[in-house]
Amino acid sequence: MASSTVIASPHKRLLDRHTQKKLAGIGRVIMILLIMIIVVLPFYVAVLYSFRAPDAITANRLAWPEHPTFQNYLRVIFENESFLTGYKNSIINTLPTVVLLMVITSMASWVLARHETRFYNFMYAILTLGLLIPFQCFELPLYINWYNAGLVSTNIGFIVARAGLQISISLTAVTGFIKTVPRDLEQAAMMDGCGYTDTYFRIIVPIAKPGLATAAIMAFLNNWNEYYFASILLKSKEHMTLPALLGQFTTAYSKNLNGMFSAIIVIVLPTIIIFCLLSETFVKSLTAGAVKG
Image (cartoon, rainbow, N blue to C red; front, top):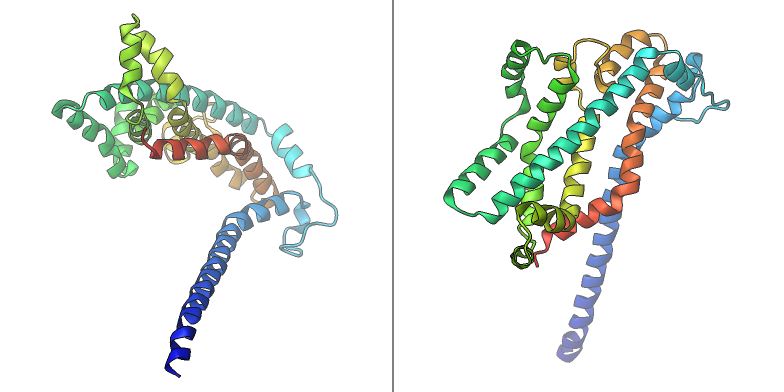
């Protein structure tokens, strides 16, 4: 009896471990499915209603329409000049902001990563302190300064403001990646006659591309979807970006919510395309920055 119990217990323990692994796998699948439903369902509803006729918004709420129509998209794109203006403004404001942010961040990150003295550590702490401060705290002083400088409702004012507000998060991402780059490469380049400028463009920028790509993608998504400061700093319709302009579409499409949904799909489409094209680069850059050496 005792021997049979001793022999059976290891099999029972193995069975329990196998059951636990199986249950854990099932639990992970269930969690992934729940997250997918939470993320995908609102987007599916927006796409669904954007293809419906204005008089069929409440019919079969989650069923695909029997007769899909592009009428809502045609109205938004071709019959609304302010929407096209907002699209142009979003491109004009987003791309320069990302470029300016990457230039400033890459240079500052290189200096902060290679000089680990008390002064530079203090500067790094001050620059990254913006991650701990709610951005609403900057609203009033930023608006007063920009108003006095005549930068309200201007592209240059919005670009500088957005780049400044995102320096903290971009600096943290790029500095952490540059710290993993061996210093021997820079020393070898300088021994071959490269100055700081040549070393920056020939060594640092090519090697830090994964980190810069991560910061650039995050900056693009944040700027393209920016609504809060866009609605504050861009008062005129001639300078409004798409998210700020979308708030006024509620009035324009108050009797046609399908038009509102089609406008949302057109706005988020560039971010979806960019993420699909650069998702592999984004994931690789995150994992590359997490491994030193």
